[in-house]
Amino acid sequence: MSDRYLWNKSGEPDPEIERLERLLGRFQHRGAPPLLPRRIPFRHRQLAIAASILVTVSAAWLATRGPRPEWSVALVEGAPRVGSRAIVGSAWLGEGEWLETGAASRASMRVASIGQVDVEPNTRLRLDKTRADEHRIRLERGSITAMIYAPARTFFVNTPSATAVDLGCRYSLDVDEQGAGLLRVILGWVGFEHRGLESFIPEGALCATRPGRLGTPYYEDSSEAFRAALRRFDFEQGPVTEVLAEARRRDALTLWHLLMRAEPSGIGRVYDKMAELVPPPPGVTREGMLRRDKRMHDLWWDALGLENIEWWRKWKGLAPPVK
Amino acid sequence: MNPTLELASGSEDARDIAAARGGDQAAFAALYHRYARMVHGMLLARVPREAVDDLVQDVFLMVYRRLDSLRDPGAFGGWLAQITRNRAHDYHRRSPQSQELHEHMLIAPASEDRLAEDALEAVRNLPEAYRETLILRLVEGMSGAEIAERTGLTPASVRVNLHRGMKLLREKLGGGR
Image (cartoon, rainbow over all chains, first blue to last red; front, side, top):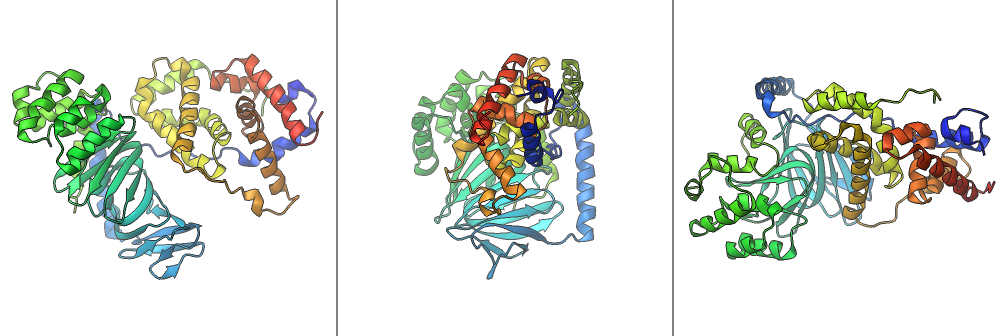
């Protein structure tokens, strides 16, 4: 064997290695860099605002041009259907049309030019709206995985119990027959909203919903006891003290949300536990949190070591309201 | 491949990392072009082929978000390699275990495509260290020195992996030399 040729293609060529290079070269990487999320560094906020205005203006201009209100859907496996038509190879999903997969079928949708949604078996969803500045589907049941490269709050998934708001990310969303949902963030951030209540869900975290109730986000690696206590708090009116008793430093994500959700009589306890895990930054006081001061709540978020809340608030202010 | 290929110096990485941290997307694209073959090859060694392109994108998006946590820009390659391995591991943890449908099942026997699929499958069935290094060399076209530079492995380790891996691969493919 020619070690020199194997090492750097110098010296006498080795016919077997040459043959393998020729055969295997077809699998070589040929991709392009990803479209990077428009996460703007805190110190460049003015630039971010200018860019966001440009995006909004461009989106409005594109909307006036009337982009095709359909998404392409590719067959992945089995026999998914658009309306009553079985997909053969690929199809178009128009506004108001339903896409349905059976027990052994899967499909993949291009979300205009901003991303992709993979549709798992036993899923039923409808394209409600596709515009340059807003793309919205309704997931009635089943499972999807979405990968979106677009400004935050451009892609929305309505479910029977809450609305998932894309913040530039990859995530999966499951909805069962009763309308209960589970959102799992694989990369980036997702917001989950229901009747004015918001959950910010970072990478590695999940959030459950039930019809009429939005759950509290938690990290996937939290303890079973913590998750069980949180489930009882969210959906069975369980005591917040059980949740607090099981919380670790990393579960401050959950506790931060509970500051705005616990009963008035329990906020003080949430504050005390949260302060033990993540000391409140200057400007955040117990009295302020007891009256659910929004500014203090945001300040404390920044102390969690997650992304600065500014960028999320900023994008939100420029986007259309959730319907 | 040019045997005299100039490898990126640590200072190029450091310069691009510093610029990318400030939001310079061209600098991040330079890092991408320098390391994409490594990431692609490492994933190809571990996950189904149809998932590789998406995961390459995932890895670089993840890296972009986490650049601030990289303490030593000189260790970027090793750091990126570890993120890539973790992402592949995570893929298997999250994905339902299922039999991968290989394209070669649908390809006519003895065609070039079929031979290529079989060769790739043979490499992917080698022990992990050998399969990763061989894919970077035979699929991605990287030299031994480049593999060492990018992954943070020592040149000696890469040389051993290439040599032993190639020997095993020849045996699997029936050469046995």
